[in-house]
Image (tube, rainbow, N blue to C red; front, side):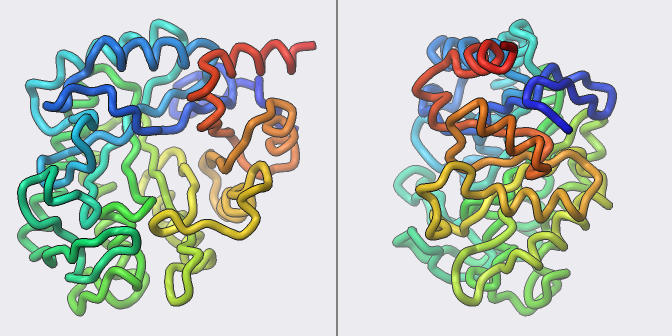
Length: 327
């Protein structure tokens, strides 16, 4: 049985335990998306004792930006600051991953200065704006921007990248039939709706010899949306395309299961994926207790456990978990 403090080897990387700091927006970057001292301190504190630190979603291009003080990876000018961030995390002994994202229809026009884009001109749940439908040429440009962002991450010294395909942002908008009404090769069947995921993974892999994570929303929790069965099929296909770790989440745009008051409310999703893939799977969902996290691993719910909100409240969570479970 796997324990929370057990090491994990992935693609030659020895991860010291199964504790993951998931990507959570801090709004601590500069208005240009630069790394700041406040951001460095935030991650330095939370890297102590942690197995994997996944840096918050970074915007790969100006039109894919979500918020005013979001961390950026859209320009080579940002690499020097990102080097400081990667070094800060790794000096504390954690494996450093950085998340790459395009906000799609959830990029506010008041932030990006233009109409947001998406797979279709369909309003995304939780957004008041109707996006402009992307052309094939624009899709190719976005894939290239993911590739360039991955290159910058590698030049900055990160151990790998995570492609964001959840929470109603661009890639997840393509995957859901609720937000993707296209009639070309990027719409319709599940195979077509996951095409952007696979093409992005294939192209990013050319820049990333190291760890490649994918944050995957495996169900929409909305009628007519992505089902868990479909989400698991996507996870299996991502593994075939070379993804090293699948970071499981759920909900299209904040939609959640009715049992969110329970600790580990997404673990049924990670377990469903874990049962069908051979690569490590990250489980998440309101997890607070080290004992609960350890039990979830022992029960085969996931291979790694991401702890979010309590880590924001208590930067010493990993250190305390190690102390509790070492008794």
